[in-house]
Length: 284
Image (cartoon, rainbow, N blue to C red; front, side):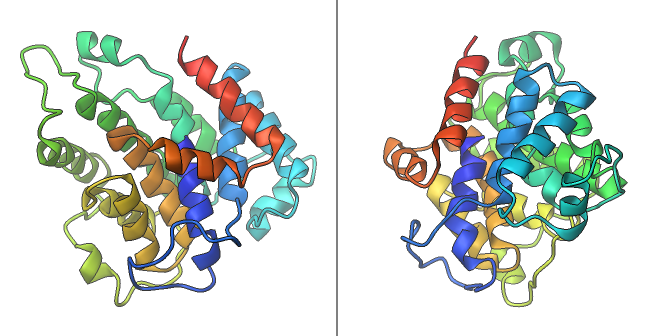
């Protein structure tokens, strides 16, 4: 979850001023959190409140109204500030940028014992998307992101299925399994490289036009910071690309204390409170 927030903050200043390079300061003074952070926190709140359909709707509306100027899309904003509780068939990448908490609710040991990989709170992920973004592409984007996060937690964390050996000492093999699963399950083409994507990539807020690119940014990375740099350097919807890539990279690499502390300095007390409560919630 924090990986998504950090990616959002780092990418915030480049969304409308794209850069096509990995050479940039991670944290600028004018960085800020956007709707990606607010909605990620809302999903965490919904899960802590029970994870039902009404919990997601209530939390999204509550936190969206607490931060009315966070940068929401037009249709989501309309949904947010009315009493309408029905989804509106969006295929935007909002479903994927906010989904990361759903991939942290399942127990890794249980998944290893039962062979249910990926688990990753898939039903939660699906529901978290469908309450607004119920288009098949939006649900697919959320599920693909959640699967990638959970599989990274599993394989990079040293877990394995019965009859297998841990592969956490082989990052390339961990990523190969993630790539293979996402391509097979969701039909995303993850064969292109960041260098091939970067020259012609343009602003695209659809799941199908941003989730595969964000996953590739992670797959090509060496560490958490590198994943964010890859994502931002593509251009386009920089904060959301970095949020998605960062949410996956956190599960694979972890995040340094230095980066965590700096990111916290951009958040206000209500958002910090959610992060603290979430940390306690998933450690139970």
